Length: 204
View 1 (cartoon, rainbow, N blue to C red):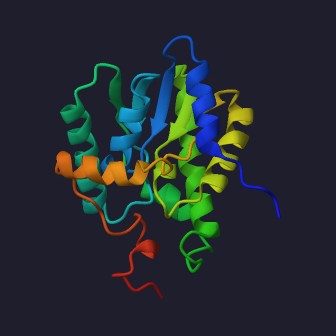
View 2 (cartoon, rainbow, N blue to C red; view 1 turned 90 degrees about the horizontal axis):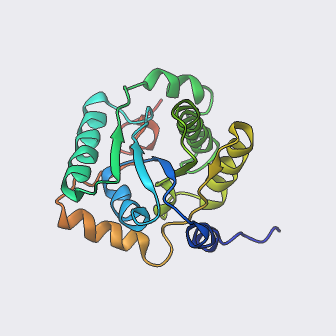
């Protein structure tokens, strides 16, 4: 069995080696998760939040979560943090996970979803000239940081853009995200995003 990499330590190595504030395109899954991540990274990077989450269903839920992301950035009022506008793209998600609908939560379907969202982020970073790409997904105790960082590392090589290794749940990161969500009165969803992760919806 392979030893797990300490990605929180890898993140510390990166931020402690920086000699200036590079441009980071930060994929964000939601406002609550991004709250801690943004406050952690704001002193090290010029951050653009990339809210690309075509997995979120229905559209009303997507719009609700997006509004909370916009609200948080306004509330934080950090000059070096901005938002890249992204359109809803649920069809891309449906095509990506076709045939994997019945997979258990956290399994192959989710890994495909991670790759879809991160690939889009890298593509945008290449288009706009960002030096780093990262994601807020590792702040969640329900997301596998080993898998996420492996995907990010592979895409980093493909696009020739630096990947920001992370495991933001470490050092009470998830707990701090909950505290910040309460502070800014953010809506905290009770399912990851897609129809298949929502236990209130019966999937045939």
